[in-house]
Length: 86
Image (cartoon, rainbow, N blue to C red; front, side, top):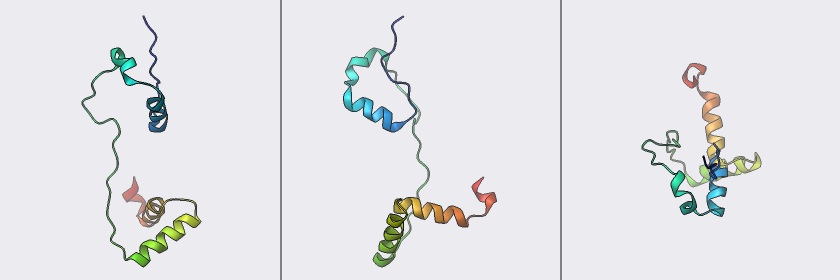
């Protein structure tokens, strides 16, 4: 039995790096069709903000070394009742 050359990784970043440096046609005999989603994203909620509000969020996020999305998510999680997050 021939050893697979495809990486076994759960990281999207690792898989992307592999795909950036390899030709998928070299592995056609190892590929299989997937009929269900592999990576499922969470739900998104749009929050309408005035420009000055969005700029303030960006400034606070940058000062904390995170993205504005991460900052807003932290704020939401901090203010949700514990029952709602489990």
